[in-house]
Image (cartoon, rainbow, N blue to C red; front, side, top):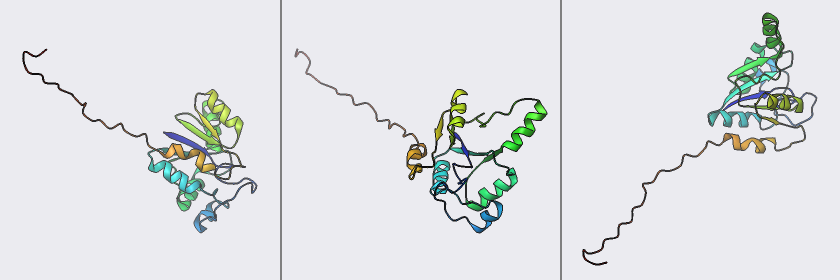
Amino acid sequence: MKIAIDLEGTLIAECGEFACERPHPLARRALRCGLRVGAKSLLQSLVKAGHTLTLYTSGNHSALTLRLWCLAAGLPVRRIITLRQCRKNARRKASLVAWPPVQGQDLILDDELRHVQAAQRLGVPGIQITNRERDWTARLASLTQRPTQPTTTPPTVNTIRQPLGSH
């Protein structure tokens, strides 16, 4: 599954609204904020389960800064989309910016209900991650589980043998 995850308000606090892990010194140089408690292990388990992660942000961060931050923080994000990039591409194509960037995604995780609803209108399921959820990763734990393969056992054949001539 391809999962797009919002940065501000979902993985990092915008104004101290939830507990954050202490950032790695290298990560702090790239972005001066800590990661939401449980985010790193959740993202790692999603990737381990075979999912592909895209980080998107409406903040004024460059894709390079975010890539360095993800590497330093140990986040297994494959793709980064910034609003700045989307606006630049939209100007080239003379089109509107589609936000959140749901194209090619199977699910989005965002703290803003309007972004989740916008994704749903485009046919992409979304999950709102609120600031009040202490154990926010528990709700997403089902995403980390791979579907179990049904075990194939040979069918049982019952053979009843009767002697010839007995009915």
